[in-house]
Image (cartoon, rainbow, N blue to C red):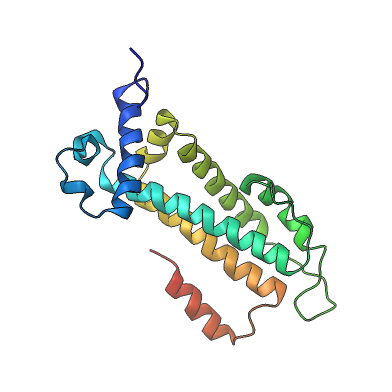
Length: 188
């Protein structure tokens, strides 16, 4: 018999987690609805893992949104159908081909970009694992400390904001104010 929740009980756990969090965002009473199989915690990944998955996915969404906005606002070439992975592959080349905001000077990303780019590509790969619902790959991801993986993903986006704001000439605040804003945004 075919089981559309997945081939194994573990696949079903991932399916139920996705369905639960989607429904719970709309109806806060989802967890107390005894008629729902997804409401039973034993049928899902634990809450800490589910929240980590959400944080990773939304961090990736935030990154893609910010990358697109930067490229569009600066007049850099961008294709609507570019995926996050493709945007990461071409971002530096496209961004450094345009001028800083209100200037004739070309944008130059700092040397720190190389290290950050690796972190951002890791975030994109994590998002792909989650989006493509491969239980084994998602469980491998969660075998590590899920909150730390999620925090690292989010902080990579914060570092992206910090570096690109400075490089494109967007952030005109004094350095102390910029640092304070970034420190407040980061998670520990």
